[in-house]
Length: 170
Ligand code: FEO
Image: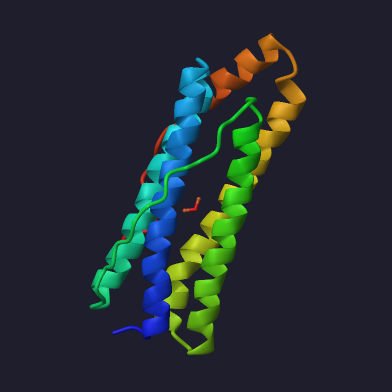
């Protein structure tokens, strides 16, 4: 059994991670439509990672005898008007997720729920990496994508990203 406030926040995080997957699939779709298949690949893999995150929260709840409560996933609403916009939105979104993870951590910390804090440690580190990756994408875009040749080369670089399963196993 977990503290019910912590369990509620963990359940809500499942929804946020699946929404993240939806958001990144929407971005992958946008880039696919623009024939930027490297950017599409990068966001498609990001989508898979977010799905994995949702499933890790699900498994943690189950491992602790807590019911998993699923709720409606909102549709992404943004309409992108240039190639840079999704990159900026992705960074903002990761900052939002970091704040959400920190909120769960804080709730666990207050009640000395060391098990949940240890589980969340992986996500705290992961969020640091995800914010950096999102920020790197913006910086690379600004440095290199100012002309068609640079955009083509950056697209090729992003095409090389490969999916790897999360290092956290529950
Ligand atoms: Fe699951 Fe990108 O945070």
